[in-house]
Length: 100
Image (cartoon, rainbow, N blue to C red; front, side, top):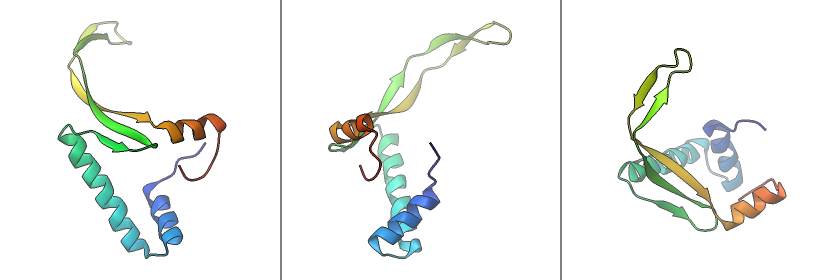
């Protein structure tokens, strides 16, 4: 397993679609900005057969500092959850590489 960076994705998109890296970078960054904006508003983002991104609220809880074993109040917060769609789930189960 390795980490794929935004830079690498931009490069691969530019080659695949045959556009400049600058144009591909602009599209990728706009896409990410719009996703962050919509999730920030609490909206759900669905890509059919790929998956769904949604914001969930985590309840406040009491945690424990592992070093001191002291009880600590952990405030509630909003987190992004991703649930894979049917096609992505099948592809991951097969261990298939390539486009999802």
